[in-house]
Image (tube, rainbow, N blue to C red):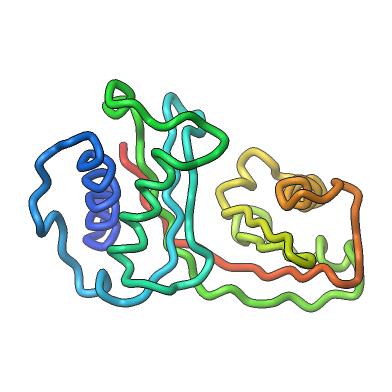
Length: 183
């Protein structure tokens, strides 16, 4: 199935931004699409042989979509604290995925069980906030954490909270994504 023009543009911008850091000559207009100038929030995920190699993104649209994806691609390649910076010899085996986030919607719930019961596995991206702590899982994370209770527990850990922690001040918001991945 051919990729749509926006997905092609975003994947091209992401890869070219990383290549530019390795000294590749990159044309000014690497891709075009009318939505690239509009504000957008993206996550760029890098994989090698199906394994995560970096993932960084924006939860809110605060800059033009083209700039957001380029900045997040460079951050995923060189500043994800879970991995060493990408090396030039890794680039050919690195696959790029771009997720364009929809607007997040705050969830209303009475307790953790109610919140978990409202989740749509495979569909919902989730943002968890408690005090100064915040973390998110993209909808793609459901592929490796398909149980909603386990999904939320791991998201709490990602936010620096214990897996079994719950407090009435926890805030949850969900969002959807459009995603595109290099073959």
